[in-house]
Image (cartoon, rainbow, N blue to C red):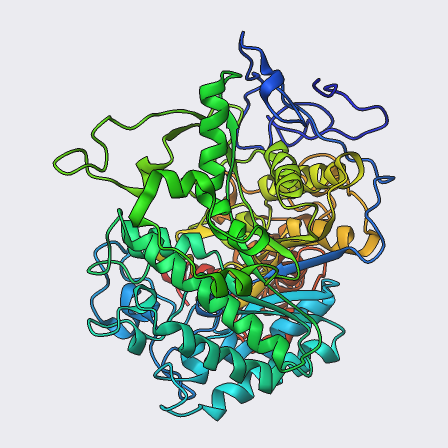
Length: 639
């Protein structure tokens, strides 16, 4: 019941090395593992596709074409890219407080202390150039979020509408439409106005946020719905309820945390706010689609035992069924009601009716997968005087990651392309084949990558190649009604509590200069969008045939840690000759021009965009190196 390792006529992913791009297992170059997960258990109890034996290779046949009208896009979030935290009339959000924007003390759970979204990618000022870059990449669908506190500084209509904030988003939307890019707007991507997260009004723990959210959503509909026809109410309710009001690793964090009850209470209010906002949208007669995006990592049974199969199912239900069941089936999952008792709030009949059918599509954020094994709670769990309850123990499953699941820079992200295919099939079966959009999927690399290394991202190229190969099979072999796929993210940005220590972008962000540098993955994705078919990643991987015009990944031996191509080598040779033979002003100028020309070509990684489009400083990195070399030479040899 497993699929063959090799598919006839297909190009195969490289796992272990970038140069051997026709054969090998791994899901990205970050691992050399080629082992398989198997066991002696009977796996027939595990749902298809794949039972006990999992793909070691993925197909890259250009004949694997996606349906006409399939949506390809990039995504971002307001707090992660905009900056301008205290300009244009914007009020503070809980993420300004959590990260310490403006120099205030960050929350103790902020991992990258000193980092914040105060400036980030400064999209608030560079939005027009960013849209131009999107258009040059061939983007036709862009998913972004609106900052609640930029429109309503204190979170309420009574506090006044910030028209400057309305104008910012209106101009952004107009610019997108002008370039043929459809805006997909998310109303809430975690940045609650700080005025609504206080001791007296504790954010999503308070039901009074429901009408306030509807007011904010209705304002967005009234100002932008004439041009925006794709709306999402909430992004990843699981993340900001469990991690924001449970563990405290995301905003708002302590003192609003309690792992036993707060995630369920906050989640309940979020669902009510979603249903009410959708009701307002539909009652106003706006055209277009509206829904919600939920997230989940797939959990595959570690063995075919009934205990592990049930544990994997519980893990997925507690993650995505919690928020999807009320919308698609009319109530919380039965498993959750039995286990949680009074800790899980209940819906009135009217609330159930408002929730059922309140999403025109199934929005899915997905990154990685793992194996699940049964982990039962103690007999005295959640009893007076017994073991204290916690969300993490409630679903009675433990997660196992194996060597053939390579990990990204993010400690939680394990690349398992077949897991997305299985998840899509699970959603299709459980919710009667809803139209699905994968609204986030992506791969992270270390945040300290210099530009010359960051733009060469074979791990991300293979991640996208393998995941899109599997979604194609989900559509064509499993009958999943998948209608679109958004890569995360358009560009490197502020990664929440991790600050700038991780990069998810297809475009490299140089935060010091705000220069945008399209990576190899952006070039690969551009071809995917243009052809609407699976793209062989081989030409986009380092090694023979690499498509970046002889650009090579840097190594510890590379002079100056830079990526030097032949034109640059000629430039540096001219500089050396200038100093060796003295008086070489002409040679110096020619050398600088040669270095600068080749540098611009390399930064743009295949001339994807003109760096001059960005209002960044004139001095490129190569020119800085030239000045340093001139200064060193002057000190050593005299003027």
